Image 1 (cartoon, rainbow, N blue to C red):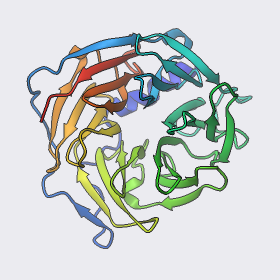
Image 2 (image 1 turned 180 degrees about the horizontal axis):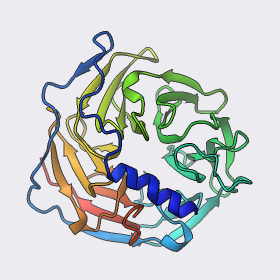
Image 3 (image 1 turned 45 degrees about the vertical axis):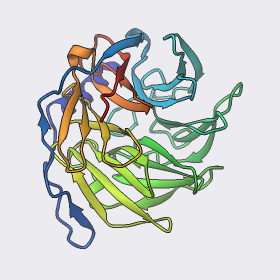
Length: 332
């Protein structure tokens, strides 16, 4: 039943439930990129390969990724409720498994199953990740130190769906999206109280899931909204959110994002249901980099190390081959 609920939920995304191509106008808080995003034709092929295949039968559906400097990829396996390390050679090692709630996660909003979601690695090698279970005793932000058991360091609302996770190193603060509540919350590095940092209307879901992927970049929080197909930038103004700017639209099924290069002009995004990875330019237009021809199976997350692109595919609706794809970004 759990897998059937998952398939139905993501199938809703594939069908474009509630997708709004132009977010609600709010002149006081929102500015919009001058050119709406459209996914243009694919440029010359991006070299790619499948680096690891995961076990669909045991729930190894990869949801989010963080990288070690040595090329190890740390991933969350959603329905298995696990955190794992994928070696540069493609070997999978399970680091932790979260206990299932008594009801199996049936009370988890929107999805009906418990899952591990966003993950971050700090410079000391500690992993932090999110767990959504529909249970007030277990939903929250967890810390996993090498050789230790995971420990919850901040509780999060059980009626929400904590999803994307990002870390602001200078501020020693985590930012996380809640796809059901339509919020971004902030949590100190050492844990404690989670405060709602932004509940801007641009983060809200329209029918299924709203705020999703998140990153901190050059004194701003960047987030995606799956239902609306939008990429958002929110300036950090002395720790408070500034006016929301819609940087790109019409990105059906947008999930996670990463940055290539040193500026803000190359955002790499996964489009889950369309099975694409795109590069979003500064003017809001998107160019296709990877497709099903490269092995994509509902890509959920993306990370960049130098010119190497790491893409996780969860196979939520394809139910064929959850995997990790490595690709080489073209020079600019």
